[in-house]
Amino acid sequence: MDSALKQRVITGIVLIALVLLGVLIPTPPIFAIFSLIVIITLAGLEWARLVALTELNRTLFISGLLAISVLVYWSGELRWFFNVLGVIIWLILLVILAIYEKDTQLYKENIWLLRLAAFLVLIPAWSSLITLQQFYPSLLLYLIFLVAIADSAAYFSGRSFGKTKLAPELSPGKTREGVLGGLAAATLWAILGAAFLGLPGSDWLFFIFLSMMVALMSVAGDLFESLLKREAGEKDSGSILPGHGGILDRIDGLLAALPLFTLGVFWGGIQI
Image 1: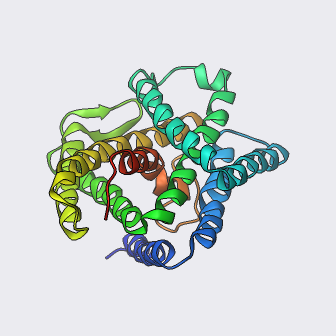
Image 2: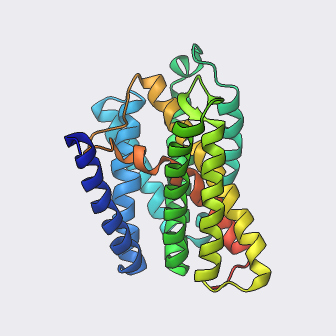
Image 3: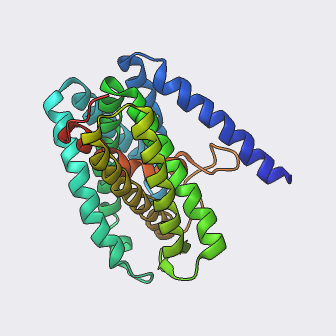
């Protein structure tokens, strides 16, 4: 095993352990604080760097994210507002990703669009995250592994069978065959999850369908981060995770998946 792969594997094992401990052990307030640090502060700083904010403006940028997040934490109504907003935003982003052109000057001439996007992506994801952990920590753990399994399966399927590019102007390595492989793995994980969680038979089809839609939405999260990095001329969002890049590189799919999954769980009345 070469040193780069070894470093990636070690970091991956540590991340899995932290996810297990972080989701299942802390009380909701402690989880909210730590996830706020990771998603809003650290990932927010990476986002600020990608959209070329100066040091002073980065401070104001993060302060704004934190201030709104604190308000969201104390208001149940705001949590659901941002949860629904997150789903709407990702549906809009799907269209934006579909029409993206590599040589466009839109985002360079209107950099405020990508700066505003941080508030419309990070805060809804964090709001959905803390809501899901408060009521259904096991479902949050299920979701994290759903996104990871779909992403890994898409990678290996794409390498083995990939021929048709999914979004060549954003991510040349992604293929439609890879996405189908990821979707197949996500479906299998959903079936196993429904059985392990003891869902009643009436919830199985909805839960599996929701999981498939969430797995597909996670691809949009990956592609949108690719858009951010392409516009910034960067390969990774950061270097805080050895062998994996930055935090945004690890949670991009989860950012897109969280609002849809959380809304689906509560709207669908799933009980475990």
